[in-house]
Image 1 (tube, helix red, strand yellow):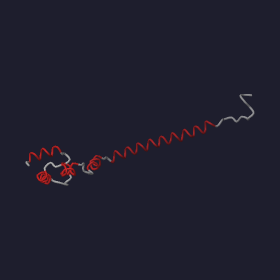
Image 2 (cartoon, one colour):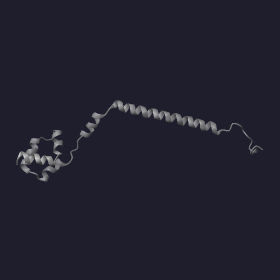
Image 3 (cartoon, one colour):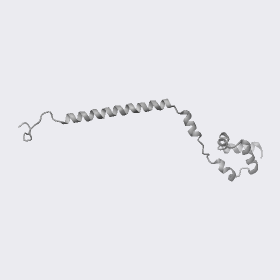
Image 4 (cartoon, one colour):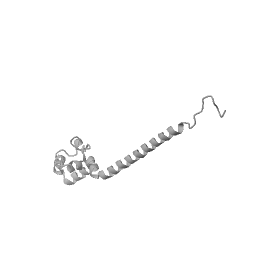
Length: 112
């Protein structure tokens, strides 16, 4: 099998590049497998399944900005403080507005 055949085969199996990037395999080892077994699917099944990597988590952590998170937390705290203050004032206003200012006797109706 030629190198050109191997290159064409690798283009159909882009998952193999992940193993090389993660230093789990080398292109040389893949070529040796290809040279021995060819394009037999049973050999390549374990490599064509998506490998479990933490690369996505690592990429996310590289983009993570703790200052931005702190700002979001502070904004959420301010919103909660405002909501709490409004709820307290509303409760106080309801309590003071419900109580009648003039006490009337129970027997007196509509300005009798």
